[in-house]
Amino acid sequence: MLHAVRPGGGIVLTVPLHPWLWSHQEEYACYVCRYRVGELRDKVVRAGFDVLYETAFVSLLLPAMLTSRLARRQARTEADTISELRLPAPINRLFEMVMDFERMLLQSGVRFPAGGSCLLVATKRQTKSLAMQVSISKPEFTATDTAFPCKADVGRVSSHS
Image (cartoon, rainbow, N blue to C red; front, side, top):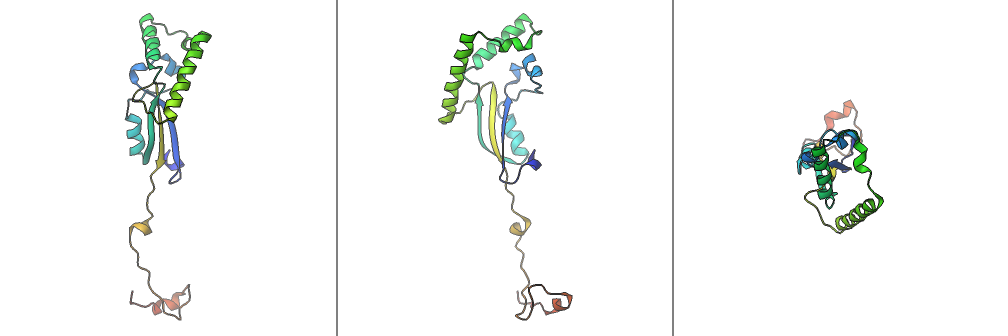
């Protein structure tokens, strides 16, 4: 990913949080894992990015998500993965309102320590070019030299630099 981003460019990532929430829902969504808090940040920083913003989200619905996952584990229901997403209209509307409120909180600057997912924004670290890191002294040319000396002119380079 680092090579696909220009220096100063950025990435926006969302990943599922908390391995203890793993269910067949993640397999259905083709997820490979659920991250621990801070794990994505560590990987992104090690890869060469600077984290600008990080928060959990789906935080206010985390208790409902946990309840649903625990109920499925106890019932050992695995056949219909999508059934977890089929909610009665009033509950679906309530959850939508909760998410709207959470979005408002996030936009006002609130950051959540836990939630169903993590949002991370980062920029590719800017590296100084070699010429900026190492002081390179350019040879001075005499007034009779051209801007682009040919091999014959190289001997006329002034040595008082």
